[in-house]
Structures are given as C-alpha cells and as structure tokens.
Length: 257
Ligand code: 13P
Image 1 (cartoon, helix red, strand yellow):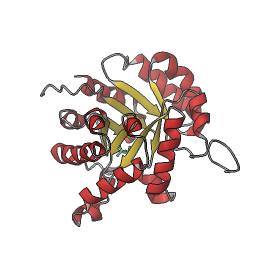
Image 2 (tube, helix red, strand yellow):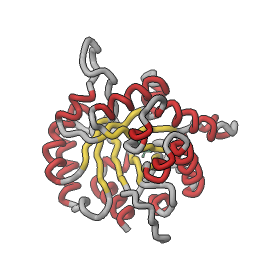
Image 3 (cartoon, rainbow, N blue to C red):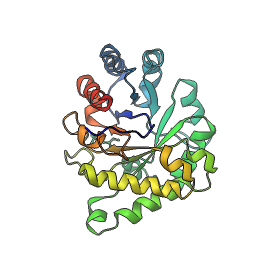
C-alpha cells in the first residue's frame, strides 16, 4: 500500500445509531479495550446512543478511546423538551459530536441551517463536530453530486472564524452506500473528499491540508483498505460493522497498517 504522508492522524469512528442498551454498550467497549485498539497511530472513536454515553465514558475515557454523541441541540439550555445541550455532552467526557448525519436530515428535519448552528455550538463547547455530507442515488445519477457537496460544506461552515475551520472533521457518506452493502469506489470517494478539501480551502487555505475527511457507507474490514490507501481519505465513519468488536477492531488494524 502506498505510504501516506499527510500528517493527519487517521480517525476510525463507530456510529452505533439507535442500537445497544447500556449493558450491551459497556460490553462492546470493554471488548474493544481488550483488543488493544489504542496506541497504533489511529484515533479510535465510539458514538453510542445518549443513554449509554455516561456508562461508556467510564470505560473509554481512561483507555484512550474517544467518545462522541450522534446529535445535539445548538442552545446551551432551556425549554427544548427532548433535546440534549452541547455542555451536557462535554461534561460526561464527549470529545466529538456527529452533526448532520443523512438520517437526521432525512427523518428529523435537519437542514444546512441547523447543521451550521450545531457546528458553531459544538466548537464553543470544545466538541469536535463530525459534519456529514452526501448525495442520494438520484442526485448522483442527475450529476448533482459535486454541487450538492460543495453547497453542504459551505453551508455548514458559514460564518465560522477561519481559525475554527481547522477544528472540524468531515464525513463523506453517499446516502446510497449507507447500510446497503454498496460502497463508492475508492477513487471516486477520494475525488469527492478532495472536493470537500478544496471547498474548505476556499475559507481557510491552511485548513485544506489539515482537515480530516472520513468516508462512510458500508465500511467493513474487507473493503476498508481501498479507502485507507486514498490520499484524501483520513478514516472511516462506520455504522453496522462498529457494533461488532472484532470487525471494528479489524478496521482499526487496517487503518494502522
Ligand atoms: P453503515 O456502515 O451501516 O453503512 O452506516 C454508515 C453510516 O451511516 C455511518 O454514519
């Protein structure tokens, strides 16, 4: 495999989505710790559901595995029934938060405008936002991918201090590849990730070479090497395979090679 010399630490992130009760969640991270996933030049992150965050933090924080939430509100506190504030996540040991996942855009009314508010709120609270962008199959077939991705990236970063652009992570998740077993070709995923990088560079030239960009969509131990070898892909946002300790640990191993 071609040696990558980007200076960007690979990030392998597990998005558990709406899966696992607290005991199952703790069991999974205990298995990951036992599999020695930390300390191989790869940052390892798990994003459990809200109910499991605190219990999981007690296992992963001392072990050096990073913790993230899957969503949050942009306000600090107040009358927002059912919502979780950024400070609440930071308090229990979260370092990351996924923002704008396509499932939130699709089913829960997340828009580019709310993504932008959440990105700003995350940064104020020292949480690293993982900003998700991606096109539907229909948009891809109509040739709209590049314009859509650029629009999503620009909207997410609208009004940010250029210095803060250095602190975000992007995840390119083609919607047609999520949970379908279909993946983008490595080189095509890389092309879109480079487009994200160039768009970031229009706001902060330095950030274009520093910002980390993950690929997500049916990542498995068997297909990840193709993505890991791409120069503009710095890791993976893993759904289904992150629920199996062995598979997730194996993806971390591939990233470490
Ligand atoms: P799968 O890996 O299950 O396709 O999910 C990808 C995803 O949506 C991660 O955020």
